Each structure stands twice: as structure tokens, then as C-alpha cells.
Image (cartoon, rainbow, N blue to C red; front, top):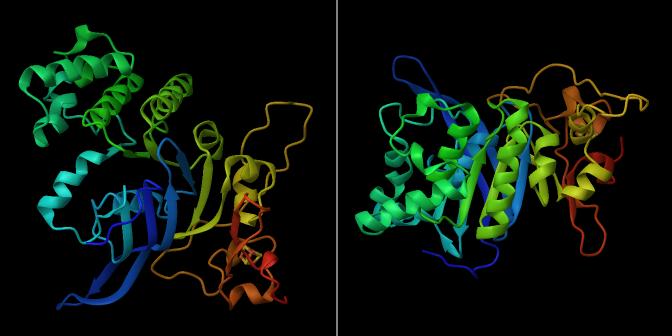
Length: 333
Ligand code: SF4
């Protein structure tokens, strides 16, 4: 098993996740759905990478494949310098305490038959962490961390609001003191009024416990609040990656520009110039040739339909800004 220097905490190299499409009586594989198609990224301890893109672009599959909840088709994942791809099951199980997930749906992700105490304690039981009294203390401590009262320990999930349930889910994810958390659309099922509370909580956890987050959202306005770096995903690939500040101040990829233009402008005097993208994300079973965004791109050139754009760094010294687009590749139209 390969090991690496411990920085950055998470290192993903050329990760791919293809799902076979089977047909006929013999269930022969006739095609592959390329849900994640060669993604590389890094996250340092205490930092957040915001992963943004429309529904169906592969964000959640990427999160789950990094956590090895789905077996990668190819590529490597290192956590704290240890390669977890291809790890034997028992070793991977032990590593799972370092990496947790917060799910999108706080209603479906908590077992209705378990009490709050049982739900939060579950990772401690699974990983045999601490004695029974230490586990009880840890559960009480976690309730305080996520801002819930200790009196709720013996109550059931249906007795809580969406925001409270998400706090319970966050407490469960924190229980084994993970180094890395995938937060998969953690606020999209919540009312706008409680979204900011949960986002503030995640920001505090990152600061206080040095946890690295991959924060997945379809909403760039949400990502902005919690991320140091933003990675924009389209059809299984990262098309732009830079500091949050640079992405919001000077987006380079036409897809990122379109996503940003969809953020409502709070000032009624400022004209919003929304870029409307035609159609939906194409099927990852039949990705368009060349640049996969070309059928929807308002800036598409002839070269875009034939030649995949290379990834280039358009940032300044010490400020990398990666973009995969022929507008920056020097290719002739
Ligand atoms: Fe648009 Fe071409 Fe750039 Fe793709 S490579 S985003 S089609 S301009």
C-alpha cells in the first residue's frame, strides 16, 4: 500500500467511477456511464473545497467514491498520506473512522426506530471507541457542540425539525473525531431560515476541529459561505478550480459564469444578466465529443466539438486558477 507525505490531508488522483450498462439475455456490458471521469483534487486539514454543479453531473458519486462507499473504476485516494483505494476490507473499516459523511436528506438518513443517543453513538459502537461511560459522555458533548439540548437524548427523529435532524446527523458524523467529512448537499432539504444556522455550524467545526470538508452543493451562493476553494464539475469532470474569491470575482469557464449568473442579485437597482443554459446535462453514458459542454455553451467554437480542452492554469503566481476551456487553450476556432 502506497503512503504519502501527510499534507494535504486528502489527495485524489485521476479518480474514475464508471457504471456498466448491461443489455440482452446474457446481460452483456454494452456501455459505461462515466459518472466520474478522471477527477484530481486536494484538501488540506481545516479547509473546505466546495464542489458545485447541476444535478446529475457526478458530484455525489465523486463524494461516495472518495469515501470508498463505491469502488472506484480507476484512480487513487490518499487520506493523511495513506492510500485507501484497494485497501483490504478490515483495514478500510478501521480507516472509516477518519472519514464520515453528512447526508442531504435529514429525514431519510436517520433511523426512525433509534433514539438520538443511539444514532449519535452508532459510529462509536461500530469502531469500538471508548468504554460505555466514555461513549455516553461523548454523545452528551456532541449534542452541546451542535447546539442541541441534552434532554433530547431519548427522543426519536420524527420529533424534530429538519434543521435539528441535520444537527443530529452532523453530531453522528463528528462522533469518531474524523479528519475528513463529505457534506453532500447538507442544507438543500432545509428551509432557507435554518440553512444559515447549519452553514455557520459547519464553519465553526472546520475552525475548531481542523476537519477537512468536501462540501457538495448545486448552489454557488451556498458554497461561497463555507469554501476556501471551489471546484466546478460538469459531466464527471472538473472544469474550473480556484480560490473561492477568484471564482466569484473572475470566473473563467462559461459554465461557471452561467452558474454564477443564476445567483439572485439582492440590489434591485443592479441589473441581473442571467445566462440561460439550454437543455439539461447530457447523459454521462453518451458524453458529447470534444468539450462535453459544447452543445450548451454560448461561447462554443468549431474546435470545441472535436477536441477536448486541456486543463490550463490561468492564475497568477501563488494563485492557481485551473480551467478546461479552449477560450484559454490557444486553440484556433
Ligand atoms: Fe465552451 Fe468551447 Fe470552452 Fe467548452 S471549450 S466551455 S464549448 S468555449
